[in-house]
Image (cartoon, rainbow, N blue to C red; front, side, top):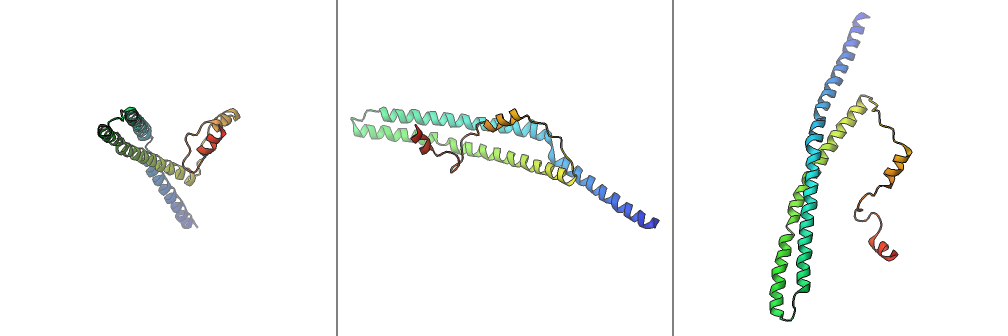
Length: 168
């Protein structure tokens, strides 16, 4: 009887040790310092750079288009040369897309890392029956959050622009 209790206790302790080792491994993967001190600020800088590059390119393209629209059309040959030069400038302004694409890729990679680490935390919580103490949110706060603008809709979602235009 004592021998079977010893084996049973040994298995129980071994299982607990394995669980603790797994938990330690999972915790080492989370690294919240990396997320908050490096990755999230880096995402903010990348997104700001994307907005800035897009704004500069848009302004450049619009200015060039205005120049073409306002150009003297009385000499067709000179006008064609003028338009060709300005179209090349528009193409050059469109190169921002390559750099912003690279920046968006880095932001997506960071979001994926954060998502993976949150997944690790969720698995830890689930596997160890941990119940986090979620902060209480008032009804007013819930209503305010529900009213927040969610930004532009993805294609096929939200209100159709033609429907909005028809309303006005």
